[in-house]
Amino acid sequence: MIKLYDIDHVVMGVKDLDESVESWQNEFGLTEVSREGSQSFLVCNYEKPSLILQKTPEAGILHAAYQLAPELTLDDAEKHLKEKRVQFTRSETAVSFEDLEGNGIQFVNYRPKEGQDKFPREWRQATQSHRIGAPRKLGHVNYLTADINRQVDFYLNVVGMKLADKLGADAGAFLHVGADHHVMAFVNTGQAHFHHIAFDMEDWGQIRQSFDHLAQYGRVMPWGPVRHGIGGNLAGYVRLPEADCFIELYSDMEQLDATHEPREYPDDRHSSNVWGMLPPRSYFRFDAESIKAERESLQSIWEKEPALLGD
Ligand SMILES: [Fe+2]
Image 1 (cartoon, rainbow, N blue to C red):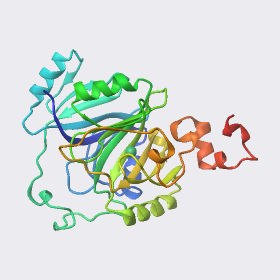
Image 2: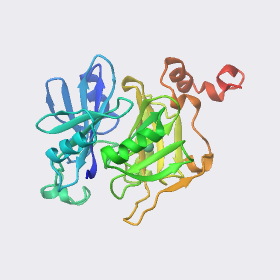
Image 3: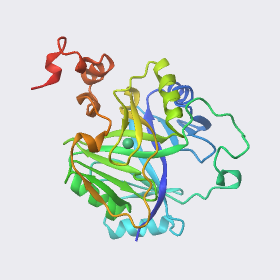
Image 4: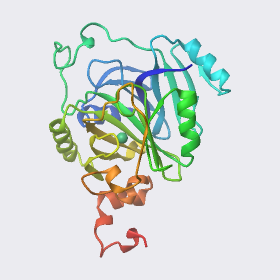
């Protein structure tokens, strides 16, 4: 029986490693703690690296890694995947495989917090200074899918997550491993694509400060601020065209306890954003035209680009 403890890190393929490290440090407030060959390791605070940037010819997310429950080993994970007849590769530190739509997944060992890291960052004595925007932690990943029911089944039975909630019968699904409402989620858009990496922020104040800061770097927020109905989090999203995805900054996510039973939320605007607006259509697209439309807010300017409004 497979069981996960938490999300561990995400590996993001980037074309220009130096430029991306600078961007993640200056714009999003992460800190590079080491560099090995074509990889850079970044932390939100004092934890083991949450984001690994890897120089690749094609930019995009390479995999999301999850820590096994403390009582499990990589041998257990390997045995489990063999039983499920899932192809995998094994290294000293990870078992790697893919989901049904080719998204990379890794199991890594549980990593107990040591020393001062057992305590909240606000309490501990600083060993490094934090930059503007430094999130509390890596929170979740989100994928667009063309095969939501089979993918959810795979993440429940093979990856070892639990269903938190569903949006409609098959419009979206949110999966958790611990108290946080979700560590990964699917949106059924009829097309598979990585959508976003989400970072947990202290509060609305830190989110506001971060988006003000990101605006100075020319980042565009196509959707937000919102209060999600499912998950309850306050959130905003900026596009990261150079990594073919979005970054979500959020706080105040619903906390689940051991008695949680999955709910099916109506597939409506209120479940997505209780405050109002749904995202523009570009939010689920990654082509150059959509990125341009979003950057120039063309979807909100009726006279100029009526074609973008659709039927
Ligand atoms: Fe999210």
